[in-house]
Length: 449
Image (cartoon, rainbow, N blue to C red):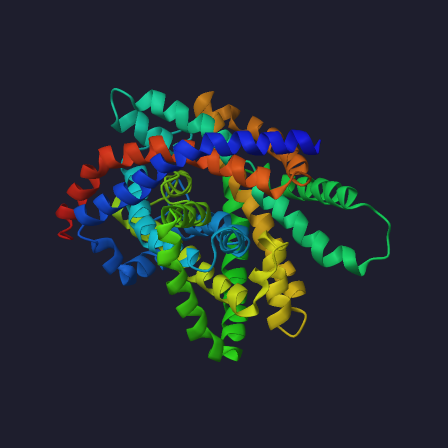
């Protein structure tokens, strides 16, 4: 079994190598093009974005802007930030945070564009509910190659939105915190298998309820958990205020390490930061437009502004707080620690010895809410490839994969997700760049640029 997993990991790494450079070009190059085209105006409208988030549209089919952003944040704020940052630091050192944050600002503009287009170009189902997302704006807006691109995106999405990373890291969290305090002789494999089954059953109650049930649950859970995580994180930083400036100095010096650049590792460091940032906030991947495309919003740029808040909150703030805590604790210097195990040790060290237990409670909520929201992405992709009414069939595959994901290694899981995200990103970013003129036109009509 170990040999099979090792072979799978090596094969995935070889596939990712060329694709990640294409992703880098499209995310960074394409993102910078959109920043220049928009004159960075969306980033200057944060006040308007928060006002739109809290305002309500007249009752009509779809979900509210607040529900759409909550669902997207449920998928991105959580293990992608809490565990993903630790993985990035373990693989590339403290300097990786700089490249993650810079990518977040570029990602915010990408999400503004993609979610604006998702509202501008969408269809309705038989009940009059909006159907939006990359597969729809590709088909409607990109006349010649739109349909093949949409099929490509949807097939990659079936794998990219599987709950592999979330389940794997959530299971590892429970095992790391709970198992040492028990007196059973149950093997770690059986622990993980049991947890996987419990998560699969628990998630089923919400997942099979459909979009309305998912957004209702996540819009109630996510804001509270984000506030709790911020409070705990800021408390740790304030009580270790003397370590913040040295840690920031280490982060910036590591990001521009001339020795690393001289031996050819500099671009590898940048690329790793981009990959982990994309994994954290999913900018350019095309997931967020699937929720924001269901919004009641009539003007695309209104939805785009609200969607833009996602990367700024989850990568710009949550990742920075997590990264600083990991560095201040010194836990990142322990070679055998990676992923959620590294973050748990950091919080335990800096929060009265019980930080890992409190983090476990928050991770449980973040992780389970992510399981809810990711299922809907797969339903949309499967429904597009077959028929919208058949989309829920994917949920059975999704629930089954929760159990499998609980027992595989984190390296295999990261490889599969990175590969699938790269394959989703390529057609989505091409479509967004081709259709960006529509966004620019609406911005001009509203006298933004």
